[in-house]
Length: 486
Image 1: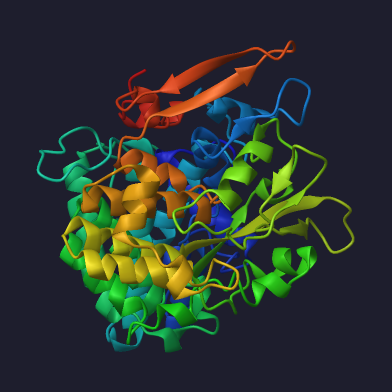
Image 2: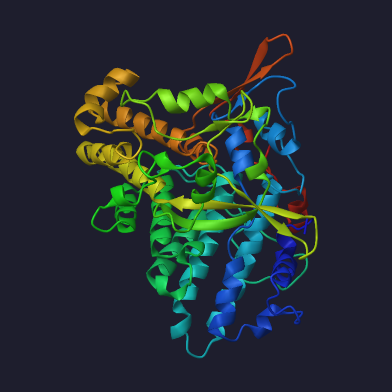
């Protein structure tokens, strides 16, 4: 499965499902998708089982060089720090994630084809909704990471990524990247058609599927990229009816504050966490990346905990593995043996790809961007109330005056956006989401590289640097697809 590309994702799907022992006796899975249960089982493969965190996080400004000879220097971490292309098919690389997304899309398309052939589709409708949302999500992640960022009010006619809507029937097919605009139009179509069909009762553990809250959170993220702020507010608000976000945010300054380090590792990715909306199991070594040379270190750790507009310290937890190696205690590795008696296997990391915390901050940004400053501040203070130890609204509340003083920004909108981006940068440290904001706001990134004598050089990724687009796998050229310019 290390040499798949878009023209053979159908074969990838068959191999993937074979691993799951689903219809493994048939060479053509689609001919046997003749029941609701079989379609539902197929859709467990409709989520990208690759991990984007290693390359998005290490490309961002949430990492530092700890110095020569300090920490591990594996290719999956070194290359994104230098913004170099990595065409390896190994886990935690852009190529692996590209393949994982198209494998997921192939599963969604096979399910949709089977549903379309069913004489009575009534019982299938929740799974049709899930398949449409899963297809939209995988394509959204691809266009975000491998194409230019959508810019509202422009043509968005730069190359997108192939939007695949039917199961593969040939080994080597020919594709077009389309445009960013056409990809976004297809995502929106699938999203808006699929979201009303979702039913939480369709799943034993809804948070491993596109449940209703996860669907709305994804919609809020998508429309934030489009700068359609009314829809961001609409969908984000639907994640917490009654505006009870305070009850579903991560409880950093209460329950989490009582946890041991081992308990933090365990609970952060649990489906029982109210903040978690969608979990995806990824084949990844990210959870064991504890001592990289280029990564989360002492300087970044101090910035996360001490500097913010409230004037108080965040109550996050972190641990160090021999300074300057730090961890935010978010990732627990799950090791899957190749057989019951084997001593070898594959590492997995469960990733909360959509959360209530991101959704609230996305809504705050939509409020700020549309001039609704009071509501933006309300959301920011709801968020801060779960982050500051012994939080007091009288003492710690975020205000426009505090924002102006802290950032030196007098324009309320600009100040609110700066606060939101700062909060998100801290909140999603070691989760890879900072890269999304870097793309949306064209934030430049500087990486220092230290020499043995302590001197350093600084590399810069400017706002329009072509390396902000990760490179497509080399093999896509066989399907008539051009790679990104370099």
